Length: 443
Image (cartoon, rainbow, N blue to C red; front, top):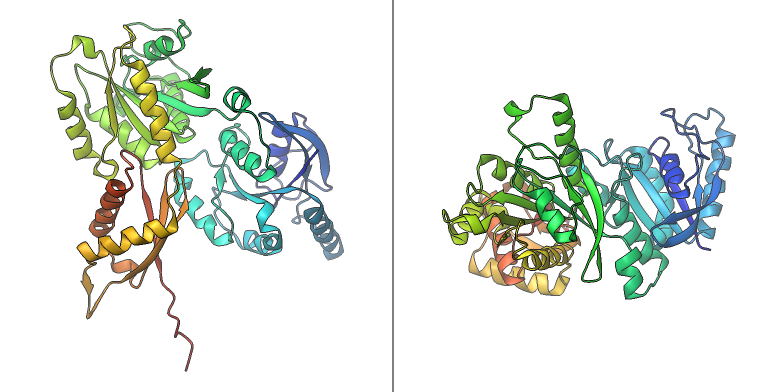
């Protein structure tokens, strides 16, 4: 059985993750740094993956430098013996000097390291996640060990690292499911839609708004693809949220969006894309999730055409042009296959990576068509770009004067890239980095 080591500075949640994956409360969990004094080993499981999991001791809380030295030596020995390493960092704290020091120790073992950003339940952590790239590893995998959120992403990273191969049937039935959240205003038909999809009255439905209080999770298979459906409480305007319970329900809905991969915004065809719908859509895009709009009760409506709804959506969300809008009737079960096919297509686009060569050929043509503006006496120059992560596709542009590159020009590049590589409706993110001067420091 392969062995996985959890390592990180104290109090980032190593023991919490250890307990969750091993199913045993073997490690004491407390907010005091250095609570874990020795390393522990246990059988662990994530999805269909089985492995030995090792929780290491933290270095803080020890005044004795000799003990610190022993722990470092012990951890170094473990690193050479294990098959994989979960390097845990704290998404709320960001990059600390102790993370950088530990990253240096792990770099010789880079090929077997998965960077795990724990405590990522807050929407404020997205920018911090990108900052973890400077530790020198692949994109950080966001999770919440305490709440069990984001573990499907960890599963996929571990599966790739360990080289575990399973049959297509096993992948679809036992592998990490696609997380699909249904959101919208109260009484838009979210629960009815899920009941129609799965073919049973699993969720309470009715005309009274607010029947769904919790973010309900349902496991389902569609075309041999494992999917976890999340029905969420209807989200109203803040001024209309009166009960404490409803406030908690909305908080759970927002959390479901953050840990979803694709989000279906269910709108009422009679009153589509009201202000609250657009606020929800903006939140989904801000969180970097793939968005699909289901225009429900289409069989009863004659008010707006689908083209008008699509145009309104693009007017409000120009950063994600081409969001799939599907007219459906949840009650009659109409166009549900079309909706699910668009969900799967959106997921694949959201998870896509583009070859660096093709990216830079496109960039050269885009710069030639519309050069960057002049700043001072010189034109801003964009040297090259790379894709640093998917989910959503995120790119780094290397620029001579990054601070002076207008947002409008970045939007031009985003629109052009989306059109060229056919990425409709998917959030695209750009990081602007300064190119290094090859002559700096030379005489």
